[in-house]
Length: 334
Length: 276
Image (cartoon, rainbow over all chains, first blue to last red; front, top):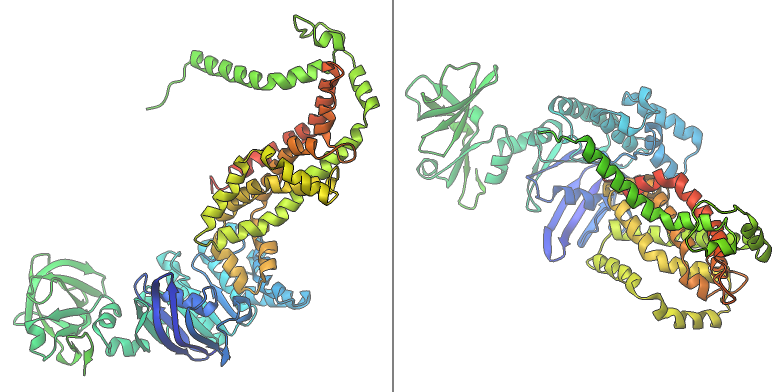
């Protein structure tokens, strides 16, 4: 079991309130991702759940029990840190065994659980090495091993992949998702990378300046962003947001169209502009377009290899059904 | 552009280094040398460097007149005891300053260090009175406590700087792994800070070993350490340079040997964190 509830939680550092009153429920077994730009309070929120920071006001409940004043060690949560935070003076075996030793389990049980965690994470051959002798990916796996051995109520991940190179990151992303499917334990995952959020999450919590902008499944956020912030943050490349005359045509203050929802046409498109940088990925081509009169730069995705060069004029037509409309307050208009 | 070092320049720097080294070493050398002279030769003018009758009689006389082993044992207990006690008090103190600092932490650190600027004689009277009141005069226990307090600011400062090098996330990880505060300090912080703690212990042991003001003023016979042993030979009965030198040599030998064997550890500890 691992349901986590935040009730009217606030956090202030001195006179600065970084988290205004916030309510959130994380269901048992759910993979929840906190995402937002740096400084949005997502890591602080995770540390409040972990108990590494004291909340200023409000309550935290874990499995219906008030955990507000419970020390981190007694909350039954496991955490994986950005820096891995392995114990450098202990072997991999001892690192993974540490939480079990602290729980005063007997040696036979500890050995059994460590071996099992090591085999799950392909670390069996490295058990007697020190963390300093491992690669980044292996260290990350040791950190995860240390978290899974004691069957915690929930896992907390604080940007665990940001120190890995791009290829490893994709691999570890899949491994963590696999782990979640297998363990079915609650996971709370903090990242600034919206691709990680989209690919891994059951539920995404988008944060900005300590405020929850929207909570939903990845596709809910993609298809119905509740405000311009979420619209601009979720999706890669970013949604094109336009104000002014073009928005007024749709009875909105701001309209947004994702790059993949604009079709490049030979001629006579609804919009046109000058091609700036073209990014050829093979399967797709992203054009950054200037002089459209709509926004400073627009991004458009064309399927396949479209032969337009820097300075060429491009014609585009947005798919009307995929246009998102927002009011002057930034909120979505249905 | 590479620096060209001429042979001449090399020779000059080498000579300069040797000169400075010898000047620093000379008093120790002279003390050891004098300890092997007779009293008459010790005050001979011009000073005798080599041409004298080497003798061990000073050592024999010193050992006869006073029990070296008793002083040595007192020194070991006082220096060792105050160091261990100091470390036990300083580790939690440095932990809280390094990992849960408050707005006043820097002030407290500075204030602690500032107590080292106070002339010791300024508190001699009150401390003597306290010692009289609690029957601590001439006891090893009393000296252990006083020397611990005298050196505590330095121990806390040194440990604080070493602890600052340890990433707080590792201690947080221990907390998440279910470690109590005691277990966190015992199993995670202390083993990681071993080089720093070791050099702190060494330095503090040496400081306590050499401490002369309090050990001379608060002891008489029972708890007197080697500093008192040396001082007893600068006696009002006359000049006994050779015996004084023999006593000094006997007093500094243990700490010199300790320093010699631990110099690698000391240097490593004092430059801890400079190179990761």
